[in-house]
Length: 137
Image (tube, rainbow, N blue to C red; front, top):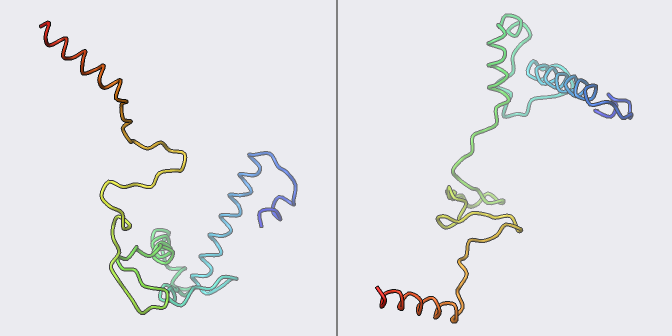
């Protein structure tokens, strides 16, 4: 749809932004039409209760219209249960996604925070230096 709008030609960035804004505005209009039962789009069966008549829509204020649209097109809240694909088993989900405390997913290139071990020679030299310092004091 965007390529049809720009007629398959490269455009300057301000023109492209304006055309993209027009496409998005047209999609909002199509969504409003679906709420009224007109146009190319249709509400899914679970959202049919949000359908309005054309007369109701005409009597609504702009605030009431935006509220009705927000109620219809709001994403459902995340539930605390997970159901298996065959629908037989339902369990409550872990808030941490099943990870142990303080675990996180790192990018592959991210360094870990493991403390490097000192070699025996370095450790022995450090111990001798501290023992000599305590003897002289």
